[in-house]
Length: 298
Image (cartoon, rainbow, N blue to C red; front, top):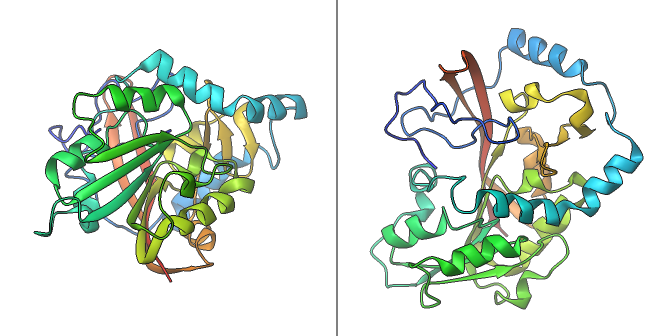
């Protein structure tokens, strides 16, 4: 489930900054990331007015909701069938945003990390290249995505292991030893899970982390431009939407992501990352909002 145009000007996105669903590119640019306050009261009022048009409840029928949930895994497999390895760019920004991912002069493979929603390896392979201290597990619910990871020329089980897993139903400990991980990354992953199942995913994460191990979270924030662009017909629940291809997107407040990790974790950091981006081709000026958080297992 779940690129970095770092050479571009600070306030610009490439012309391909929308995906095939009309969703906005979620990958941050190197020179624009900063933790800022969230919207001003005026901007919050404007965003609330936009969202009020979407209505209070779901904008689709019970049949549509049931169908979307039933075909959730298939939708991701079709996503990777359609886009193969060409959709996301490599995530070279992660070490900048999360110092825990940087090499510290330790022994090879002395730290163990699990990437949730590894996709086709856009996080795994750049990190393996830059940090020899890491051994990386990567899981995804899409069999097709995991096959792409294993087919990569850089893939070797001496450094990494990719496996299929739905983190809301499958036990991570079936592949990853219990309490063995130093780090778990969850980059634009929790938002793809139905809200009622998120706590199951977090408990699953807890089982494979060492005491003192950390979870690194980056995800969509409340009032993000992508949320404001959704139509009422795409709304599944409060802050929760279906894209045209059947994949999901939830938009977190800092409070809601902290609440997910309230049991068994302590908060290390939790903030909004806000940036203005411009798509010149489409004459769009957008404010992207993300949550970026770190939690430590107690």
